[in-house]
Amino acid sequence: MPAPLLDPNVSYLLLVAGMVIAVLALFSPGTGLLELGAFFALFLAAWGISGLNVNLWALIVLVLGVFPFILALRKSGRLFFLIIAILALIGGSTFLFLTPEGSLAVHPALAVVTSLLAILILWIVGRKGFEAVNLRKAIDYDALVGEIGEARTHIREEGTLYIGGEEWSARSEMFIPLGSKARVVARDGLTLIVEPVPAEHKKLS
Image (cartoon, rainbow, N blue to C red; front, side):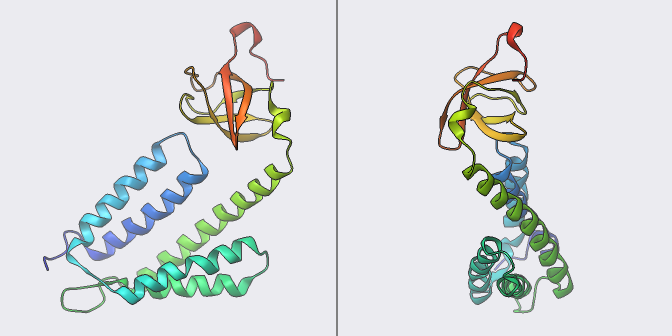
């Protein structure tokens, strides 16, 4: 197997950063910047680790660690599940990549620190995400029809609209530039269908 193209520790940092940015992009759709950043980070990580061996059991531990993390997010106070997820991430990360000679490719201390930071960021984002979902379940979505909000991104096929004190995923058949006012005309699931507001009506309701 060829030698790694980048330092394994750098490749590992890029891999974790790419995964975290990808999760952040799921909670902030429409800008494209986070998606682009995640793509480049993961691309460089894949390029860098192409000369390393992947430890199968460590990969399995990492994948299985996702489930207790989700349980910890959904069940408030379940510290037990969070600890299991942290141990799975640290253990899986430490032993995930091996050099062609069979030794650890990623420094254990780096794996521990990076895993803890990643868990912290994902925990904060995940909790906020579940709180937002629970809040929106209590909202009468149809009551938003007719309301006027402000485009927080360019809106066409997709984008983000600020209305009622929250940011919502939105789309429009007509281009709505960033900062413009838009009226909600319908909804499709959790996505608001909007239209641009003529200049004389550009007032938040």
